[in-house]
Image (cartoon, rainbow over all chains, first blue to last red; front, side, top):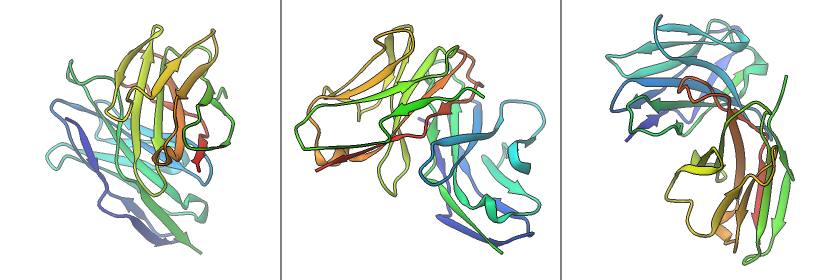
Length: 116
Length: 115
């Protein structure tokens, strides 16, 4: 079974400072990893994904994430936070083994609060 | 940019009533999904649909739930006899290809309130 953990319910950061939103995962095979962002009263918007190759992936709005296989982590990062980045962030995983199905499993979400 | 659209944005119904939540996936997408998010909780998978049949479903998706693609554009979720605990935000999603690395595109959701 696949699972995702986001250990922080909320992350607070000052505008202009770097931010990190943590995610760890558990799968049987190799993972495909995704980050989504949810603004109030909106659906989930795709930010970035890791499939294979370079462990550092870049996505929308200046976000990036680093895949670390030994630590089974896929933390979301941004060098300089903006107030407009304040939202709910979800990490998700899909197991690539043949019998794992095609569904995404989401973490519980982390609320990012960026203060001016 | 094409979007997944969901209607209505908010549905209020009485316990025991049937509801149909509607979704129009992105036109060239082949895989369709329903997820739900109970207030304050995680996003949970309900069902996936491909080639006019359910490909996967979770334990949540019991006999009270059904999905249908009645025409070439709509994808619906029906709850036959709603319960209080069905109150949640329901998200429709679609993706273009069988490749596991294609991301899901989500609609803005339908907030279902069962009273």
